[in-house]
Image (cartoon, rainbow, N blue to C red; front, top):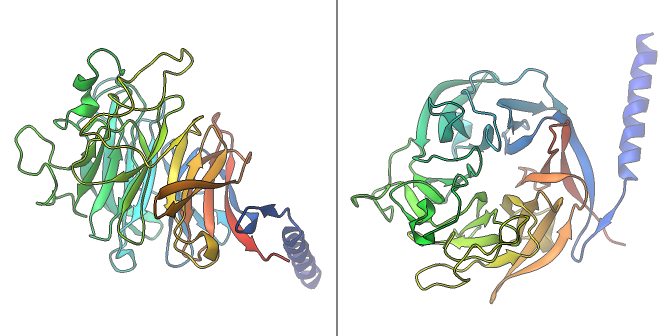
Length: 385
């Protein structure tokens, strides 16, 4: 009986492997690839982090941190996750590991934190130790000074080569009307529409552009953003961000300390549905220009700069996920700037996050707008004949 069961199990595994090997091959200009299932059963997955032992931590927006182990989503969520306001675009959002995670076990989570007012929340970041499949020693390291609708929380996290933690915060859907230069995203006295920079324990770096200035938030690294939904460093130490814009106004920006990225004074989009003009123009002295604009918008979310060896022709390319576009856009960096290359992984669902795994494959978190269970998949190269 046992021998029969083992034989049957091996047969099923071999059949599944053979079927996978014969799965569809997708073509792009530089690489062919397969889309390989990793695990399924996620509800609004938002961020992924890859542990040295092979596990994957995945945040679910309703407020759960999940573990993928051995290709399976563990049934029990991680204990110790802080309370979140899972309303609108809010909830448990991004996750990143400390650069020395192997020794200190620190993970960082961004989320919409209750403020005490009814249904109100703001962007917050905690640091915790991940041990024995639970979070312990939980400590808040960042709390945004924002108010607004239950959306545009930003919340992408990235550690820089300088060892600092970078945190995006959206404009919280404050309407872009009236005096555009008076919009909170244009005022570094609050955290609306900002990218922030802190030490790994929450301290403010002394060399931040607004540190020590009266009436300025010292954590701010750049401002004038709408809703930065992607954040990644390249191998040269440059910081890139994708900004979820209005209709026809998604952007890829190269982030520089202390710079103003223009929202809502300048931009390339219009109001949703009505098509009404938002901006005073597309250019203004003292405000930065994007490196790429998506028209129509793809509803950018998740950002990765590929550095692995599995897709050598993609090395150095920027990959941006798209929600409305249900795609990943590859952008090639050139001597003259950035140019759109391939559009890949079309029509598989809303791409919430795209990350490079420790194995050099490209992992993609797919979500459903209505909260139906979805999957994590990865891209694997296929040799061309």
